[in-house]
Length: 205
Image (tube, rainbow, N blue to C red):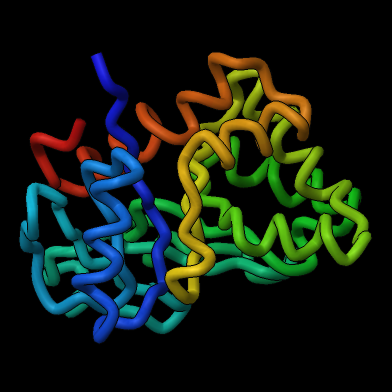
């Protein structure tokens, strides 16, 4: 049976939606989560689900919107989440300094304790590797994931169509970063689908 993949963090502009869906179908994506998409829709058998960025000032109005609610954290300070924000969140997107500093490990313990799943962006990870940057923070986070202490989903993080790659490319990236085959595959299939079901989107495979 052909695997169906879920891209949980696309940032491709909406005017490229038709081209994105065409590429997604060719790459076996069943579902794409897209930043600030107005509503859930299905195009050419690809399900499109909106995501909303939640910040420390977000209130009840965010809860009412039907979307995947994600907190973007790029520094240790931004992981000091209030109870109000934690109640709203479906996942935490990790980037920036948290990926490049080994001291971020202490910050990740907080995510383990509150049991919030993590979204990583492949485009940002690839940028860091290509530019020769330190990725010790990322490796610390993946070690938590490999040991079953946290749930991680890898999305494309694509900002344009050229950054949308076949899921097997991301699978190879995760293996190169030290994950087992099972954990790497789950980060592209089961885990993002689980995050979406937790946000109330049923039928995600």
